[in-house]
Picture (tube, rainbow, N blue to C red):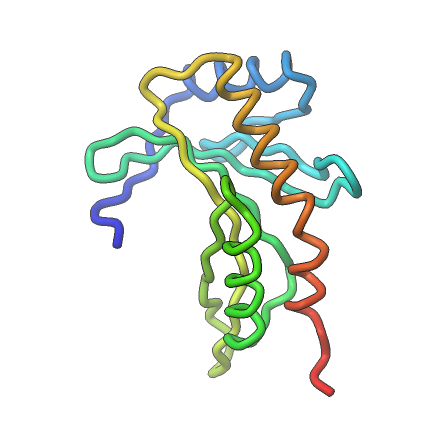
Length: 152
């Protein structure tokens, strides 16, 4: 379990990150203290990636995160998708986020990975972004199908 997590605001770091991602061929935008790359991927371009700078127990990390499906799912379906995703992926890790919906327990599936933010290179950012996007894009349609399947 994580301890103390705070979002950090460092416009210079975000601008450097945006520049690196632009030079790697992505179309990033800076918004709300984060970097966003929308409608990206390698097969069907359905991944929306957000990169934020966090302080986790005194360690500065870049958090790469994407919501897998916009549809809220039951705990059972979300858990099944979580297990499938975590079993299939090496870089991307999946977690559940409970959504506050009127007396219902509904969940969204989030994909994420982290890298240390104190010393990173253009090549490291480019490579980690590529690995995250390619691994997630390979499995996201399968996970959406599990999350959105109607009960029979």
